[in-house]
Length: 165
Image (cartoon, rainbow, N blue to C red):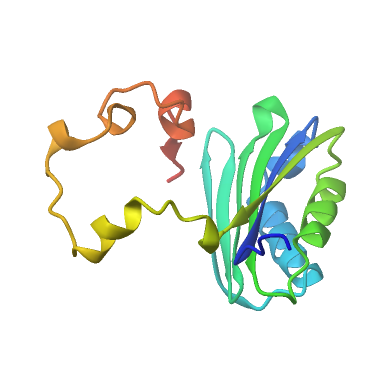
């Protein structure tokens, strides 16, 4: 018998998309909300932001988890996450709709099973049972990838964007 995850996480990359659609906050917002509806999600809230000179980021919080998008119109590219818990939500329907809506010429989808509980490493259980451990604080305690100035390939740092006024 296989391991059943608590949730499914689709990582969707859309290439060769319609740059005009990807740069339009209203288009991205309505597309993401429609994708959630088509996947049979229960929408709880949403927030979207347009960046200057271009690009949109947003998240749709759903009772089953979330949908998130980050667009790079100048590269005709969008990265989308569809994370779902439970049996009702159909994340592939959201992915198919968004690929069609943004007229993606090429698509990459990776599906991850999240919460594979019976695959927890046995050695980690005693540390967790011992109670919370105090972690060091401050900049020197951060992993190298999270230190200020580190090359993290973060989209906002890489592109030098400022929020639109």
